[in-house]
Length: 259
Image (cartoon, rainbow, N blue to C red):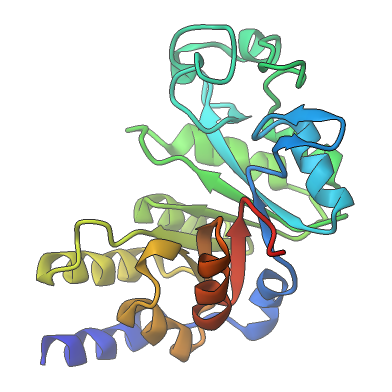
C-alpha cells in the first residue's frame, strides 16, 4: 500500500521531463572524471584537462566533479582534501582561488582547473555532466559559480548531485539547466531508505537519475524510468556491469569502456 501511494505521489510531485530536453543523455556514454589512467602517451590524472580532452578525442561525453574554493569558486576536483591528487595539503574549501589555480596536479597533468577552464576546453564538442559535491553546508556560492560558468555555454550540459536541495536550487534558480539526482541504495534497502528516496525525488524534481550500478536492477529506478525519467548509472568498470547497465539504464558513466 505504501509503495502504491508513493508511486502515485511520484507522478504528481516529480513529473518526467520533455523527452527532447534529456535526449542527449542517452546518445553517448560518459567517461567518469574524464578518460584517465595509464593510457595514450602516459598516465592521465582524473579530472585533469588532459583526461577530458582524451574523452573528447575518443568520442565520449564526460563527467566531472566540482568542489568549492574558499570563496565558492567551482574547481574541477573530486576530493575534499588536496593531498591525494596534488603535492599540497589542506582542504580545497579552505584554499583561495589563486592558490588552487596555481596548484599542480600530480604527474605533470597541469594545475587544478576551474569549471570555466573546462567548459572553454570542451566547447560544444561533447556533452558534460557536472557533479556538484554535496558535503558543504552553504552550497549556494558553489551553485552560483556553476551557474555563472554555464551562462552562455552552448554545449550540452547537466548538473547533478546527491543532495536534493542542490538540485532544487537549480530547479528554482536556473530551470533551463538540465539537472539530475545522484542515488545510491547502499545500506538503505529498507522502508526508511525507500521513503528517503521518494522524499529526495519530490524535493529535487530531477530531469534524470544517476544511479549506483551496484544497485541495479532497482525497483525504484525501474519505476522512474518507466515514467519517462532517464536513468544513467555509475561507475561502470566490468563487463558484467556493462551488461547490467545496458539492460537497466539509459546511459553509462564508466571508467573502462566496454570491450
